[in-house]
Amino acid sequence: MNKTTTIIAGVVAAIVLACGLFFFGALVGAGISQAASIGEFASQPASSPEAPVPADENSPAAGESGTTTEPGVPAQNITPPPAPSEDLDELFQPFWQAWEIVVDSYVDQPVDQEAMMRGAISGMLDSLGDQHTSYMDPDQFQQANAPLEGSYEGIGAWVDPNQDYLTIVSPMPGSPAEEAGLLPGDKVIAVDGEDMTGVDGNVVIRHVLGPAGSEVTLTIAREGVEEPFDVTITRATIIIPSIEYWMLEDENIGYIHLLQFADDSDQELRDAIKDLLAQNPDGLILDLRNNGGGYLISAVEVASEFLPKGTVVMYEVYGDGSRETYDALGNGLATEVPLVVLVNEGTASASEIVSGALQDHGRAPLVGTTTFGKGSVQNWVPLVNDEGAVRVTIARWLTPNERQIHEVGLTPDYMVVVVPQAAIDEGFDIETLDVDPEDVIILSDEDIQNGIDPQLDKAIEVLKDMVK
Image (cartoon, rainbow, N blue to C red; front, side, top):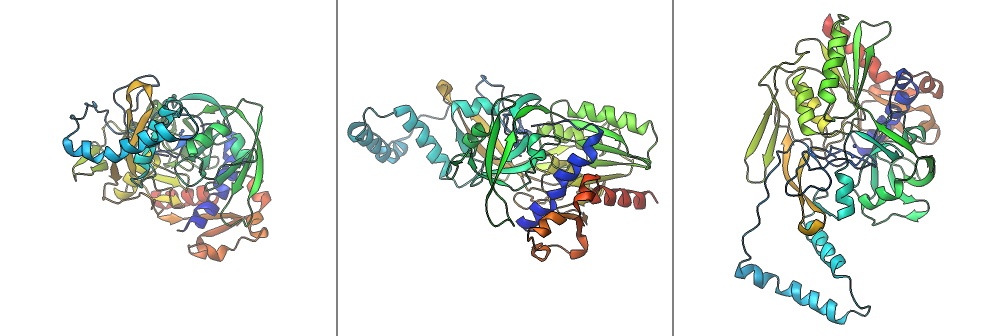
């Protein structure tokens, strides 16, 4: 599926959930590996909220130092490197020569040597060509280590700060971002009229954040829309949710909507499963649409509720070829009940780990659209003297069948692409979608307002067939 499909497929994922499902009590929220919640994965969740979240897997709390990794990566003790060899001394002679030239000769004196040092580190990491390997200055690092749970003031969207422009991964349910109509794939090219071209995504996030009740105007570039357009959003206090659930009306099916993978998500999920199973449902639907991720350990715990003990959940493969295997933990409450998983282009990182494991083991079919495609693991290492941290990609994760999903995503077993009639009226050509036309469903404004959700309807249909 191409990028256009990804964006259009999610048009109703946000709108339908806002207008329909979330009338039942959805909360607003904020934290991809880093899609940022305008959050990231493992100590930082898979996606980032505009509000800071912990580093991918196990990053330390703000103010700590020494070790950290993205969600899912075991914390490592960082030992000092060996003393520089003569080869390194020779290698760095041009660097120090350039440094001295600038310090001695640059026209505007004195130069900011701290800024030069930070710039040198940033340039070194940028040279690797990996969008997820980067330098965070002290302010950015402090933001990245804010708690995944809690609240913040902003617009409420999961974002990816590592692309050419700050990119919306998914708006949070019921958030100002969703109400304003932001969609997965939207690029923020200006904030309050200030051009963000070439500006680091983490810096753009700081422009988007602001006091509840204040307004921010984002200039959005959207694939399929010819000209950029402005969206004015009133910021709010964003409460970061984790889960909601209920029995579907007129259906003997339990519905669980997991909104993020926080440190308490598994316990909340277990409580939800216990409650739903007590009502003797025919099966369960796990909705991971627009779930930007969270802690890796939480992803393993969630998958363990549906898979037998010892079943492979994922592999982490390192640069030297070694790998670590993550298995289901056991004591799962729903390892045999019929299960269907809903996914879309906002399903990222930790969500993709769970979805990929359940799909590979034949435990649950996926319904919806191709997922985001975030499958690398980053290590967050604080630098001495409180000079921020470096975030380095140290591994990629694979599904149990050793599928690589990074920048590819997971293809659902049942493709359901939803396109609003309004998009067609504005000139969007369905034929540009790289999908079977029979998989495309067009919704009118009235359908959207009435909470029509073709992806959920398909999941119910699939589950009923499984039960038969």
